[in-house]
Length: 466
Image (cartoon, rainbow, N blue to C red):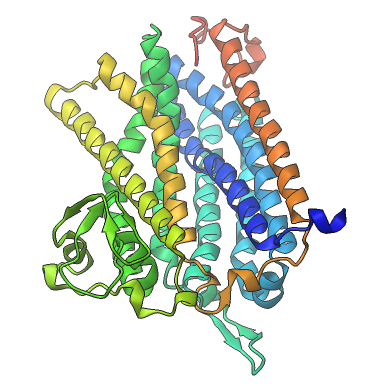
């Protein structure tokens, strides 16, 4: 019986890691960006004596605390999985790989401490002292995210270590491990993405509420703060993403060949929208834009820029055919949806510049509502490009995935358990957040002592909340 239940551990370990990461990554943008949205509302409430803004800040701080708690749980599971699913990877590379995570732990504890201070400070701190207590939450969230991405960037661009004759790490330079070649752009890309996804996610809730007739100042303000932050971040992300793609072209040519569906080394490479690579090296379907991939890779040489093809490497050192097509499709999804959000963000900003007010037509609100989900899909697609595109390496050019995985043939049991656990956790989180929202919409009576900064007559209108 035990023999029948034994499985190849590598695909199961990969599937479990992918599933838990895909779940956890949804919570990261909220943890990073919601504190900033909360402080913007808090600042407006103090500066303009805006009761709705203050109420937004107070309620957002409670929502943020819930998502932070859930993110702490899912992030802890991911940390344990490195040891349980990839023991040979950690055994060989843990001395270097673990350094960024040590800093992430420090930043997370700092964030948790100041979240507590901010939450309890509504009753106990003076208004501006309370506001400034929220600033470290924003900083710690950004630095924590940068630390985690530094670890992932190190897997894509390993550096800062010396190997002995047996191939084991004998010396580590922490500075070079953290600030590896891939870290600056990869971390910036994720941090900006966090503000985009977090902003559009929060804005989508208020846009949906406005579509259902909740068009009061409270909802308009909640939508405007969140959507504006995301819209400002979008043009920045387009520039960062372009620079990161060019870095991949220079440093990870195999991944770039998969992204662009380039079977053979050549110049004048088209940008192929959709389509897929066949076993014989031909590309079927899709819409080719002549020379664009070469022009984007090397603007100085234009369409003559040579892009290395998959034929440059042995089959064992490149992603499989299915992985190539997966990476290309994920790239198209990420770039396509990112471009859509960029264009709508330009429209949003242009509308304000011309008319000095923000668009709130029903079609625009429908699009804004959809952006909550679409931004998450875009982010997930970006991570697929990063992780699947690195295959077959877990540490680029140093260690393969199959050499890093656990040897346990019963790993499928932990996969099933984690899926069931996360399903319950996800449903519970949604129910908790919806329950909080429902109580707010029903005009939950607020104890005067729980009103921001003590008893006040400013919050008496019972503004509804999504």
